[in-house]
Image (tube, rainbow over all chains, first blue to last red; front, side, top):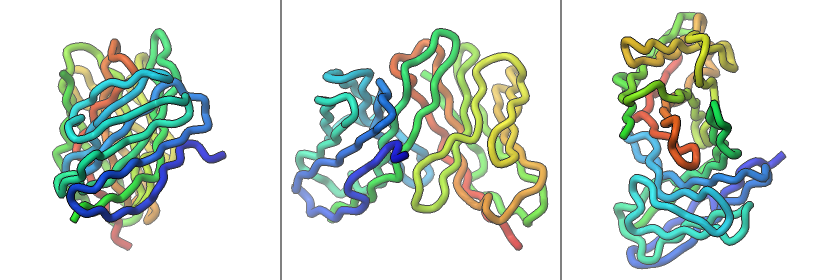
Length: 116
Length: 115
């Protein structure tokens, strides 16, 4: 009964280093999302995917790349980390949208990332 | 584009007292509306959602929310707060024709519960 699993849970990077955050979901959801959470700003969408092999930009995509090679996995990459990317990152997934309703998103527990 | 405002950054309430969290949204039509709760160190958990129909929505943990179209609001309420309700609460809005079930979140309201 894992739901959405994020790895790692914590990470400290130096400016300019690169890393990849992994999100895995076992609910066979079509849609997946990456958010960042900063104090007082709620969650802001970085990138999202509506299906395997497809990705799209969200509200704050600059400095990040994503890939969805498998339906159950959604990777978030930082090519050259900057202090402004210090944040808590959340992954979420959602089933297909219904015709007359929407589907809620299911969240992982987050990755706390510090860039020095 | 839609937006969400949660006017109260922090609220302190005594255990057993009632709680109301405000949420105002901006959207050109009737939106999909959600309330999520985040306990420390955890992800977000869905409390309740509004899609259509009855404007008073019941959720988990004894919470309810009322959609008021005329006020563009979706306030969250609980009649009697428990210490375990201390958390951060987020209101979110989704556009009815948005690709991929995308949501826009408010800035959150942190609730502290006094014994």
